[in-house]
Length: 438
Image (cartoon, rainbow, N blue to C red; front, side):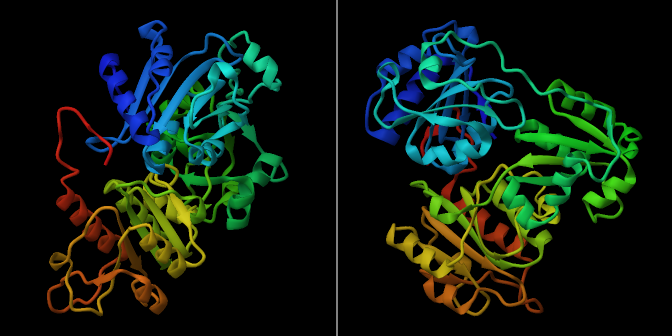
């Protein structure tokens, strides 16, 4: 999760280093322009785990027909996602994105469009995009000339937040959308998924692009219910009351959840993934149980993995997977892969070793090097990794176990492997000032 950086002098220095690291160029004029307005109006957030892997700088727009301007520079997909999820709701934001690779993630999380470069905003490898965070408004329908001519816009109009409005018909289009989100095809078509229960609803409001929420009377009997609905209203998130019967049509979960939350998010193809220079990637092959996959995603998120690549098995956006991941789905980058051995070959060509975890080899985890960048592959508990994947890996290791056991839950195995990488790399050690890059 991105955190604020209030020292603007430090921010300017670190931003210059990040930009030079990612592009090889100096952007002194751009940095000076970003920090030229009232310091009280400038907000800086950074991403990284005891490192500086990305920065978002935003301020009120002073010239173009937007309400805010933001520069985003990130070393990898996870940092990029952290920063974009920290951008404010309900603003028409003119983004200056460093690197074309950032645009697909921006389009996933923000409703808007790319813009052709203009002389006043023309910098090497910086791409322009204007949009509104999904679930918090609609971008203005204005042409590029009008947008660049200005004047600046006031805060974007937030959607109405009908806390307490009741939906009573299964034929309501909103209910039909939620029922669609109960299957993988509907989630892919609509670009949304559902999270069940008050805990995940609260975490989604923290930083995810929430579209709307739906609750039963049971939520109002929960002491946390009224504050949760008030918070949704304050953020402009619609919250609809529905009957137990309608909730039963939306989800097969029993007992019925007191609230479900619709969140924007997709699982993109791994062809769109650009591994960072110090990437730690977890690959999950054929994990068929959605709860096990969710536990694996939660573990990868906690261990600071840059991304998770899912090759077959359960849908990462399945309700049980989302529940078991405890907030990781939507935050950590997740990709799908249809031909895992071929993609492993691409990783190795790029100089990224791929370590497969299996119980059928003699080399133990603690006897092998785990250099970064690195990809780790885990499979399901019953069959393990496929023969083709085993053959494609750079090396194979097993996790040592006491006599009497020969396997671990896949989420536990992923945790053992990832946290050994964390221990060896020293990434967990706190420093007074984060190091730039990983």
